[in-house]
Length: 569
Image 1 (tube, helix red, strand yellow):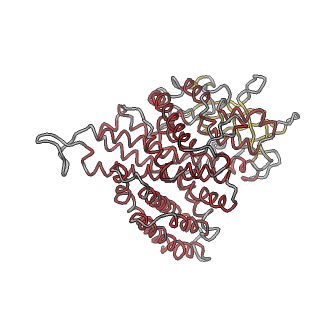
Image 2 (image 1 turned 120 degrees about the vertical axis):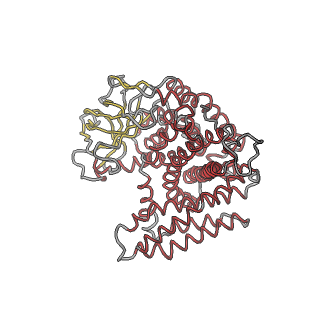
Image 3 (image 1 turned 120 degrees about the horizontal axis):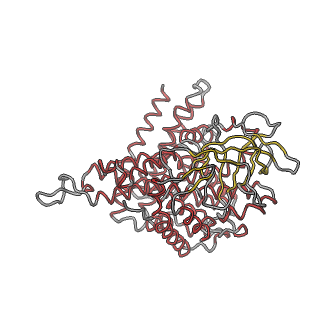
């Protein structure tokens, strides 16, 4: 089994050449020093840490896993040492503000780090994966007293954090949460209730854990508007342990290196974060950050699967391939067989385009935060709102199905543990579920972000993507598809889905196909951008581009046809 190796050269090409990130970031006063040399240095050093420290722990993380005994969780061998080295080296603090103990670097560098970490060791990465969202939540919503006590510890990663939302009867429907928060005389609140599926609810990686918990005040109304957010640490300042108890960890299909905990709060004292009844507003800061990171997980896991399959295809010989090069009496390499080439090239197309989309999203987050022009910030806000659900849903879906396709390259060897590909298939499946299921992302895109404004925001985005492209063959092709989908949206989908006699459930039937079609359009734009970039004329990039138009793009027509059938239904 070969360990994952970060593809830093490919990542740098997308960041610096395709997206020209240094030029964009240096126009922002907060990142004026983020030149090519700095970004390259951070990318290379983070890649070394991932390859040398985190990736070698992946097998033990899966086979030994997190161990639960008497309310305590012991992480797999090497996990704690790796995490202590991780936070002490400053990696969790990359994009946090310098005044909070961070390094103040661009969000896109953090995004690239977590893509590599997820590819190398998804289970280990679950622990620090929520840190930046927790940091933003505390920074923007907590009281000054709470910030003084917890913000820097979370920003630096010295203390890890959780997001305690789900309850046994309340998964995606958070309005059903029953956990109670009763005011105490000292200004704190006593939290009582059970939360499930809590990643990293208990472990030995860090000396403290900061739980952010949704709960209801005694006079709160039912539904989501009655939820408030609270902070309950594992240990208080005086060293006493809180009544936040891990009852058990789940036995899971994958992610054995990450403890998924059932947490019981037995009148555990904590502090309110933000205003009463505004808990979801504060929590969505975490959830939106998490959704970008989950999309990056999809890209990273697909890269890890592709690396294994590609390496195997260059070693294993089977039969004679059409047009093969083997000598008489020998077999050709698997990579020469068209059926295997199709699998590998299609996944490569998804990975490369995914990086363009994800890194652009991270860049837009920095522009949204730091740009001085309100109009440009509006463009960034529109991009993030529309693209984040697409990135989360489409690339996690492809991570699982693409990893399964990569397993096929191994034949029977892929189904046994020796080669490690089956672990990626198992680990990747959960990303389609958590942080808002992929179906919820599709509903969000169509019903909440497209239909309410008559498609104005999405049509504007499609127009911006089209205008962004040049006049070469691939750009003209992508422009034609972007413009054609805009016409379909204006002339077919919007009139039918918003008419008074349209069935109330019609948009819900359309949502999955709609999101997938938008994802493919983003890929077409991304590949047109890659194709127009000097340096993309090599066989490596040309093969992947051909793979996109030949093996991936035809799905777009199928999705539009399915929507047409639904609209006509």
